[in-house]
Amino acid sequence: MSEENRLGEEGDGWKILVDGLNFERNLFAAGMLGPMREAIRYAVNYAKRRIQFGQPTIDYQVNQFKIADMISKLQTARLLTYHSAHLMDMKADPVMEATLAKLFTSEAYGELMPEAIQVMGGDGWTRFYPVEGFARDSKGNEIGAGTSEVMRMVLFRWGLKAMAEDLKMPPRRVHKELGVPISTTKPSTIAQITEASVLEILARNYKVNPGLYMSRDDAKEWMQIEDDELDKLLESLEVKGLVKLYRDRRGRIALARATYKGLKKAKPLEYYQWFPDWVKKEKLF
Ligand SMILES: Cc1cc2nc3c(=O)[nH]c(=O)nc-3n(C[C@H](O)[C@H](O)[C@H](O)COP(=O)(O)OP(=O)(O)OC[C@H]3O[C@@H](n4cnc5c(N)ncnc54)[C@H](O)[C@@H]3O)c2cc1C
Image 1 (cartoon, rainbow, N blue to C red):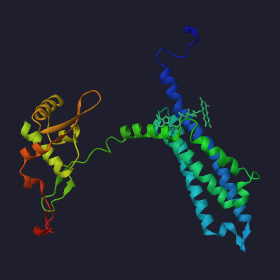
Image 2 (tube, rainbow, N blue to C red; image 1 turned 135 degrees about the vertical axis):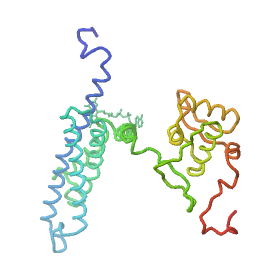
Image 3 (cartoon, rainbow, N blue to C red; image 1 turned 135 degrees about the horizontal axis):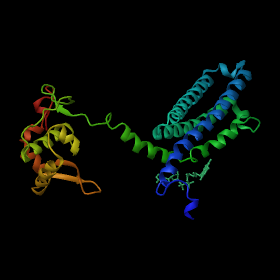
Image 4 (cartoon, rainbow, N blue to C red; image 1 turned 60 degrees about the vertical axis):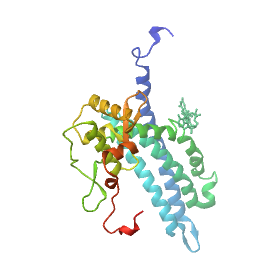
């Protein structure tokens, strides 16, 4: 292709493609709101006019519950879709919101249609009403404009980033009287940072989060230390077989925990054995 036919600036292709995805997802979601409303409209009007066992089928609570669920799906889908569209109008880049609107609406659509048919009984399933056609289309909505699996991949990645502050591991300590791990807002920090104190922090972590590694951020809750300095101490402890390290794909230290040997060196065995008062001594193993 010659340069004069290029759209946009060189190197911007990916950005231009990705920018269009929010719009596509939002548009796809919006397109489902109409058939969802129509399905409810047909189901409600049908059930108001269908007499079975002496009363309209809309008077049976089982049908009312189905209609309530359909309404809640449609209204939630509308809120998500309008909210995402509003953010786009505000020139925001609503990756999460557009993805969520597409995912939720397509799955709600897929769940709503069989229920609408059920409320209408055998008639709902015939081509005399449009609802069976909506039901057939519903599967395509979970595939087109990005499959539900891809929507979940995007939500996982963006969600973790967007909620990073909310999802931080809570610092925990062992409650002095109860002897159980509890969340704490004030971790007792360590002033003197040595191999021994790093090992002690890992031992403490073992006590409150048994079996789990500590991340760099977890460790730094308890001590003021530069990353390089922490790495040096951890590497030195690793060489001595006192800690086990997990390195990320770039080879950086990501997680650390004390080995059995390290735990033994950090604290006496009794430190790790804590039980509530009500546990009788003779019951301990
Ligand atoms: C109604 C409808 C409208 C469409 N409109 C358009 C359009 O206008 N323009 C256009 O270009 N295309 C369009 N498509 C095509 C659509 O984009 C693709 O069908 C969709 O992206 C899925 O790709 P695929 O069919 O090749 O499935 P595949 O990629 O073969 O996927 C098969 C399954 O494997 C899963 N999968 C694949 N890769 C991964 C992974 N890495 N991790 C986890 N799961 C994975 C998928 O989620 C899916 O469940 C449309 C499709 C439909 C159904």
